[in-house]
Length: 79
Image 1 (cartoon, rainbow, N blue to C red):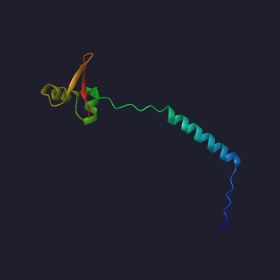
Image 2: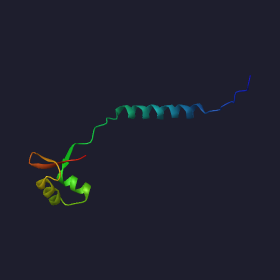
Image 3: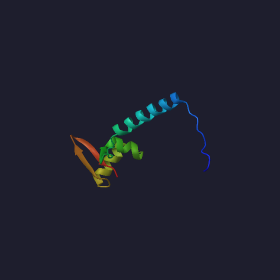
Image 4: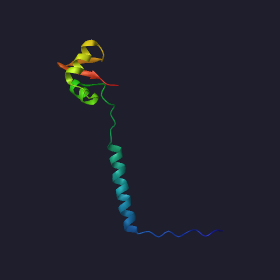
């Protein structure tokens, strides 16, 4: 039979670690993943691609990008 190594630990430190683990597990359970939006406002899209909103509107007019109107707001499909 081989000798087992002895591991010393502080019971208070272990209790604190268990509490942290429990809080982390609770936080993970509360996370809700949502898919990214299929359409974003034209101004957001413009900022993402580094152009003006007017350029995005021209791209929409020429059919270069797919858009929809939502409450009068131009929305651009993101992929």
